[in-house]
Image 1 (cartoon, rainbow, N blue to C red):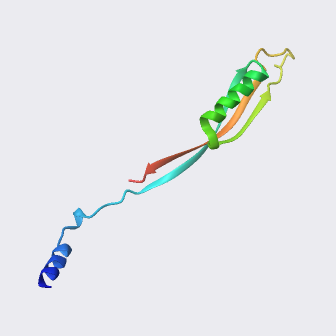
Image 2: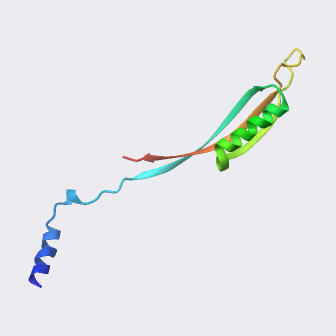
Image 3: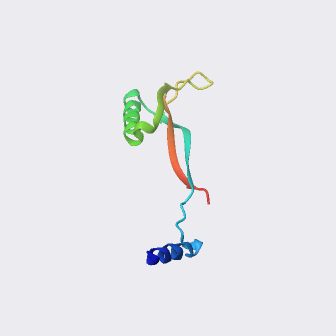
Length: 96
């Protein structure tokens, strides 16, 4: 029994710097809006959208294919489609 008491007292005398420190981190979530410009036709735009869905998975929040308006002179533009999408990105940062 005395050996147990000596062992317990020895544990209390151990220096504090040997104790385990837990790292403090936090998770940052950022929503980023992106665009793919100059897509020549609707089939290419849908293919681009499928690739973006595969790449980002559930982090893809919103995606839409838009048709660009003609320029100020009323002339049609060469590449009429644009793909706008919003992606959620998560990263872990250490506080100190």
